[in-house]
Image 1 (tube, one colour):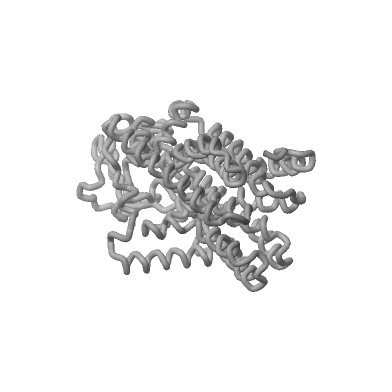
Image 2 (image 1 turned 60 degrees about the vertical axis):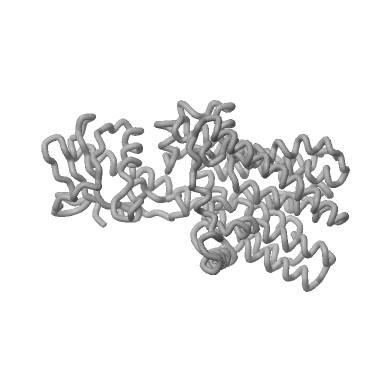
Length: 469
């Protein structure tokens, strides 16, 4: 392998380190509890059993190895995640420069584009798994690098590193399957030779790793006698009808391309514009242009194969793909460069709106919890019935993502009443303990809804709370 760092790249690394820290500082300082993190705090065994049922054995393995399953310290989780972000960013920078060296701006800007992605921020909003997922990116970047050298040098010893890393990464989060496809295609693109041979090699690596992943997943489920979850299989859409699934996928892909919603942006569209410019100029040769097309499509390839719905936080291959395209075609067109820089600025603003909004959501959730507990004059023996839904924006300004910014008081299964047991979790975490009454009972006649007078009805040791429609 060539020399990893020289004096020039050390300066770039320091700049990236400072920028990653500054970007992450808000979440490190302003600690909040988001959705699902309550489950890890109150019942870590249950949440880890649920991960095993999803074949996320790698996630559970790392939880135990790093001892992050008990005495949950959210600030420490955010600090560790930030360290991981820095490390995988540097490894990805090395991968980008693996066949040549670049100047500081060309090194730093694409990495900033990666680390300020709203998709990744949304993923890390699930604090309960942010350390392990971000560590998985470190492992995946190492697999990228060794895949490149395996294809270049044909040393089979590298397979002993690549395949175990992939099996572990796939067991952390299934979306890593897509990410490895991207890394393999970038490696093939960078080498620019032996296309057929290299495609076959990487396909075999992917196939072996995937088979081992599924095999280990089923083995773990059988050993621990855990019921296999239908959460992931329910998302496989082709069995539900080819035409209807195709229409849904096309709609979802159009949203990704045009940057529809509060998580996506115009980054994907910019990459397609770069592709068109490359086709017009034909500067890379026909075969490399095909590989480039596959690189740009790679974040969505496996979703299309399975017909699965798009969950934005799982599309973390997109920011890596966009970062690569920005790096690779940094000097293609001055206008494109300006647009990518504007994209970085918009992402930073976008992410801070999400972070500030979610912290405001958290403070509002705490306020609501304290108010209803106080107004009910509750104790551990009080039974509280919670009816209706209370959205964050009804009480405070918020910029919502896919999950970020959504109150515990608006998460609902039926769209009528909130998920009361999740609210109870949130209140218990904040030392407000009570007996949970089911909101499936007949709803009393309230004179008003939260926060107006009359939003609660007290009947002995029972307290009924109305959040409205």
